[in-house]
Length: 379
Image 1 (cartoon, helix red, strand yellow):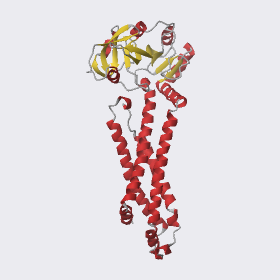
Image 2 (cartoon, helix red, strand yellow; image 1 turned 90 degrees about the horizontal axis):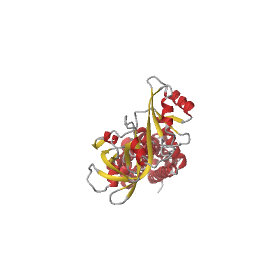
Image 3 (tube, helix red, strand yellow; image 1 turned 30 degrees about the vertical axis):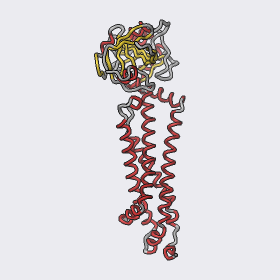
């Protein structure tokens, strides 16, 4: 029966190619869009997971996600350090600012200010220069993608000057950082430099990074910090998911991606179902002849399922292959850096494609199951 199934399938090359194309297209669209969606959501929490030294983020109660900054009083740093169970607590600045380059052009950047002593929050993946040089006054480190965006076409080198709030900063280090939700260049400076170059205001402390003492329950420590200081304290995972959920709830990103994914599944299912239906209808006499010689409906079902399995595996493999090739070809593109094809996406796509194929087969086989074997004797 397997040999007969393969011969029937390959006997009509046009329909065989159409079936494989439908499955390939549906697989490619679903796997690619889901992977991009996951990568985009991961970027939302990228700045949080990029810092691994701390256990807890402390911020104003009005902060809803990582990009929303509500400065606190500087004295809050001392209050947090006084909470029992805190091993250390350091300031962390994150905000948007505008730099002016020597040619007079301006560029918006993400300004990161890290503790001068510990450098907690600094980018560890250097490309050029010394990351600890940002301890020096008026010295900054920029990410590689931001450098290419700020000085397009220029050779990567140290010593470039930029102007920020009428202060001249020298870029003395280049690093490689995982992209965040906003694709602006990332500029690292010390927290003291932030206080020197940013406009004076009453509250200037956006976040405090906290490390729990050994053996201290982190969740209990967050509650203690909130009770003693009146601030908001979240673990790394809690803050990351709060940021992701904020984007999911407040933007049209999930709806747009969801529409694309559903359309891919519908189009793939329509192409596959229609082609399978035509394939079955045009082979009704062959199926009738099999029934005449005693082939049962279950055996016919197994025959068509064999054909579907061949088409599904080839189409799925090609679709996943094209998706992997896409991410491999674009891995160094700044806009798509960090987007990868996860195994969970591959597994989920396989399940959906399998369901599409099975439903298409069941829809197509209705005529076969009700088929009168006498049709083989009709003209």
